[in-house]
Image (cartoon, rainbow, N blue to C red):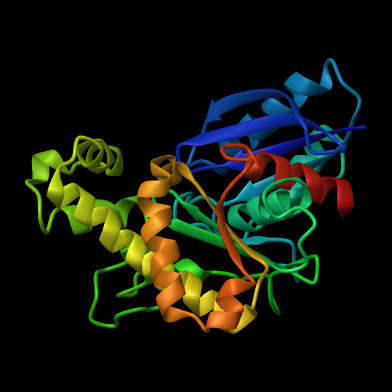
Length: 298
Ligand SMILES: [Zn+2]
């Protein structure tokens, strides 16, 4: 049995041929067309067809950044892909490839992947955080993806930690994502470092590795806020594991260590002791695998 998982990002679409156990057998990539729905759908269908030539496919799963309605199946809005406004992507793609198609918020798909066959495998209650340009998150509670009344739940990145804080990409102010994300790292770095030294989170990471004191402080500070977010999750949900993935987590212990230390300070002791905070096992394929596993199970 073969499934296709598609992980749609603001710049790249990742596609994987995935078996029923969640193993990626082949992967491909394409550029995301953000402002033309017809061409966006065409890119997806071409990726699927490129696998369809050689494999008998069962179903397709698509992870999309944005709000996915569990009531209508439509993508209500996607900040990074403006053409996705009230679009039933499942139907548009299914009509072209004649396969069952499911869609889901990309971080939710990643959470489902980690829970099925990654760092959260075997856990009943798991939170997945993905630190990229922004901060995505998904909840698996009682072994099931939890998305709330309409499908929009699990948006930890847009919980507000400071109403007077930085402007967020979502239009509001002071969201956790403005501090704990690639964008947040750059903004924090620019408070201490020269702008030309802090153009990207990777540049700050490399400076920290070289021992630059300001850059190391940036990771301490970002980790401290990540830990506060984890402590809030721990006190709210009492999860078994918080899995942290995404491009920024390539910086690994530099971020995870202060995060765990800060979570220990801010969470209830007994709840903290019952929760592991670990790196993603499936990165960078969590979204692809999760979308394919959702296609398998829905
Ligand atoms: Zn926000």
